[in-house]
Image (cartoon, rainbow, N blue to C red; front, side, top):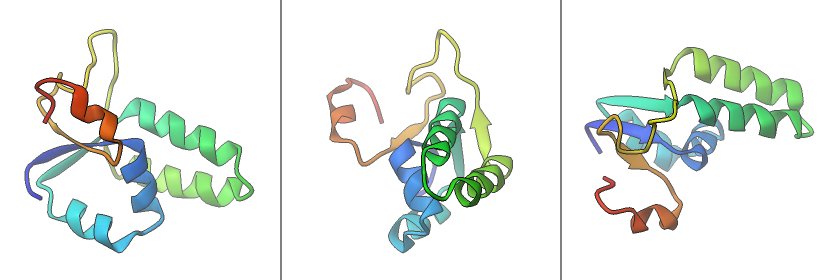
Length: 98
């Protein structure tokens, strides 16, 4: 796995959980990007978890060390010409999505 990648929420959660297979693959990427909306989703999950402070600290550290890209009205997964990394099969139905 090399190149420029855009990570979906489920992959970021796997990274934060230190899943070795995901860590190994992502570490081989040239550059990894995180949509700003993903950071919001992570905070939502943290605030509704039983380990709010611990999860919030993980997100703070992750977000500050990541390439976070903005989302606007024109944003789509293909806007930045990145390869989407996700465990969600429904993205396979989008024509032209890498």
